[in-house]
Image (tube, rainbow, N blue to C red; front, side, top):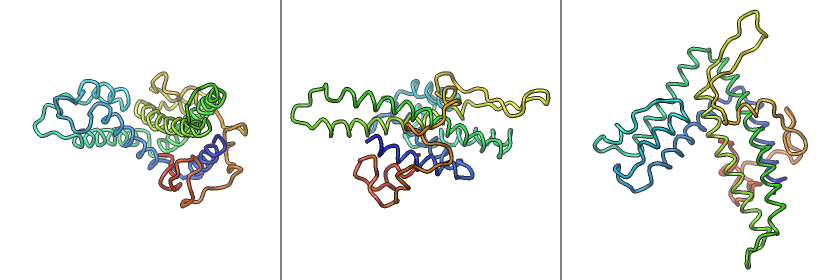
Length: 249
């Protein structure tokens, strides 16, 4: 299972490194992260009076660095879940466009790509540790008539999905809060990144690189080769790669 998931990550990381920019990937991640927090606070088939508007407003502030009048929106007559999600996506897109206007598109695209790779490396290392702990403890559990190997595969797949979900949210959060400071000429060359919320994983990710023990070395393709788009996904879901983890977002 670990080797199968490593193969998926190698291919995805290589695609990201080869890409001229990752703006579309980041945009898709942001849309999925917004959809997720809306679903957390607006259960399906419920009335507006049952929605957790206050909780959603707070989570929007944390994830997107936006103060949005969610409680006022919910009070509007005929408001729907899609309306809330659309307004949040539009506001977030506008905020990111302002960053591009302020810092320049080339700078923002470079920062997006570097941070995405750093956060991906950091979360992948965490995921490998979780898989190792799962593997060590799987035979100590009682599953009745169920096969421990199948249970391990199922739980490993769930962990992989959780890692990808965390990747989307962390990338969205860090880039939403990010401010770029251009150093004065007397300072060391480069750019300083500020505003990333503590605990987001970005700080820990900055020094992380993928190694042969489970992390992909920069610029090298995975030893298993590239997964065909119509082939079964190596993660074990049974779906085609292009419909499963063929896209990191």
